[in-house]
Amino acid sequence: MNKALQSIQKVQYVYPLNQEASLLTLKINKLKSPEKFREEFSQKIEAARFMCRGTETRREGYANLLDYYQLEPDYPGLKSLIYQTEIDIGIRKKPVDNSDQKKAKNFYNEARQIFSGAGNDRAKLNNALAKINQSLALNSDDKDAMKLKDLITTRIGGSASTVLSTEDERLYQLAIQRLQNNNISGANAIVSRLLQKPENAYSQKIKELKVKIDARS
Image (cartoon, rainbow, N blue to C red; front, side, top):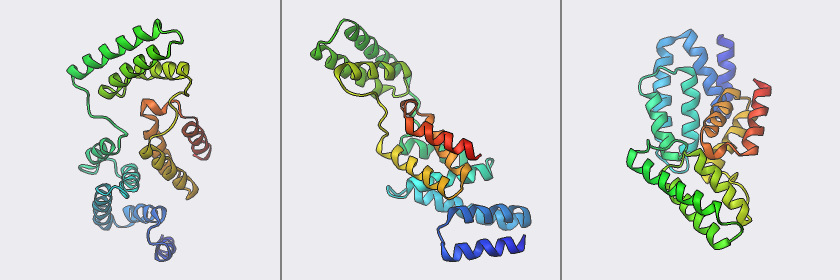
């Protein structure tokens, strides 16, 4: 175990930001020296927390938190930190209150009614699209509203909502990087979180990446 740790430390000396080597060191220390592990783990969490505050570093900070969660899921405050970070980067939405849910449902019903009688009338279709966008602005997790938006968009002449948001695209690329570095569990954690967003359920490239990850699990 000491030789393994020394080999990992050599990798970290050459590549000080190598997350996979860092995780392996933590795993070894967890077995070899629990006290040292707790100290290092606490430092890693704080470093990831700091990264999550920066616009350019929060995606990697979030991915690191997912790695640490798999290693120590009961660490105090870690789950809530991940939850808040997911809200900040758009993976998770704040709970919708009853008032907004009711308004969203009304907009959805209006959009559906307009769409059902619109045929190929572009003005009516655009009106329906505006209504459904208002619905989703209030409740972005409404799968029925998302399906209706795809139907409206397709009839107008566009394509279904399969384009990832900027944040999700960056997380997707980070998952690819994790997979290439043989951090299978880290890649899977990111992709699983991405697929929790209803709007990503139609993304073919996320699904394909999930298949690749599962094949190597």
